[in-house]
Image 1 (cartoon, one colour):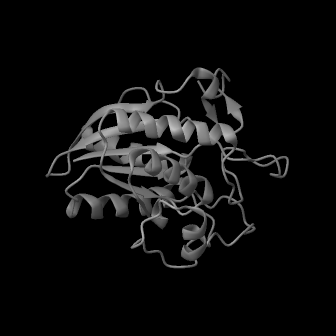
Image 2 (tube, rainbow, N blue to C red):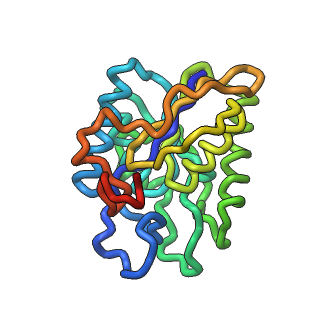
Image 3 (cartoon, rainbow, N blue to C red):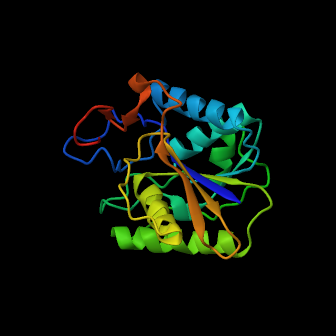
Length: 225
């Protein structure tokens, strides 16, 4: 099984209060037009390599919209998983998150048999170790009972980093990490015993550089390179 995971496209953060971390948006933001272009590039890349697997997304709007675009390009449907959602970083809950019915209303490529308990947003503030714990539990389930097809997970900066740490350990990788650009993708070949081989790390060369962002930051920002 090849497990791929990618960050969502660029979210529309124009209304986000100043002074907050744009890498950890507090609200449930949709994508910008550039974010949809990024998602389309990711979908075209996956289609070009023959991806025909299972797409699983965080229930946030920015990840579900990314999944919807990718699934549409690949002629697939997508499913939902709360454990790969963003880190709960702010004390105030800015929104409850969409219900399954609302997600179906907005995203036509969400699978008819998709399931999701509600409310799904994390209630307590989290450390990165908390995100890692919930992501690890999901990965353990996937590996214990792997599907027949390959998998694409669509998550956020914190959940993607937790996935990378999990699979760095599985493949014994101790080299340089790469930044999680919007719609960048990492891939690991997972063996039946749970060990893994890294195939690519936060790859984004299927997008033109003027499309590469990290939420509000553009490629070339020294904080992101």
